[in-house]
Length: 200
Image 1 (tube, one colour):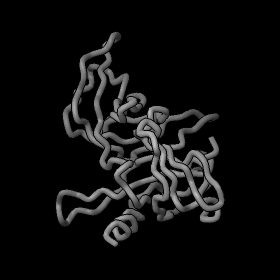
Image 2 (cartoon, helix red, strand yellow; image 1 turned 135 degrees about the vertical axis):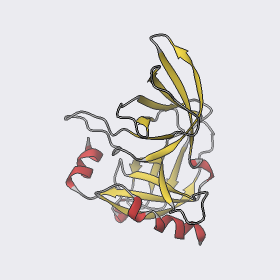
Image 3 (cartoon, helix red, strand yellow; image 1 turned 90 degrees about the vertical axis):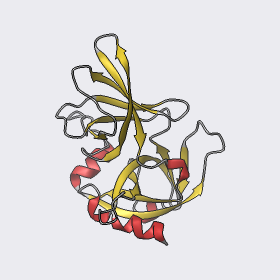
Image 4 (cartoon, one colour; image 1 turned 180 degrees about the horizontal axis):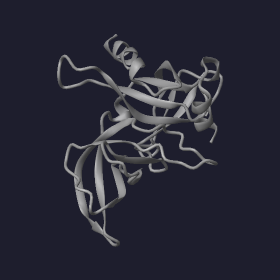
């Protein structure tokens, strides 16, 4: 019951142009490296490919508002179910940046073990632990990103050594570990701009 209340609480905090659909887990991956889950909502509920999947994040302060964080994206759908590829799956790539930075820093990718790395971060950017990481929303006119800008993903947990070319790699901890969840919020595109992101 608490999970459902928290899921509903992030409705006003979701991206503009999307409609909220609550969904429950019906299948987990049998092999850990395949970080994809199946939810009990499908096209009959309006869900389409590239619908965004969030989880509520409980703030540390009792009076702070519950907010939603990105945990995956719908990659296939039937009339009654949807397969979600999680951000911790190695095939997932998300354009991301540090919150407050005006630079689209690069791609957030996952290792085989599910660790998140933000790569190609310029070394002249001061990165500190606990800085928030959000989606950049950067794409092209012909191929827009399926992710709107400024969606929370996680926070910086450590900063690696500089790479060749004066870049650094940042390790990111997601706000929620997707494989531990049973209730999700699917944001279905309804506006013209959101639908274009999904089809792009």
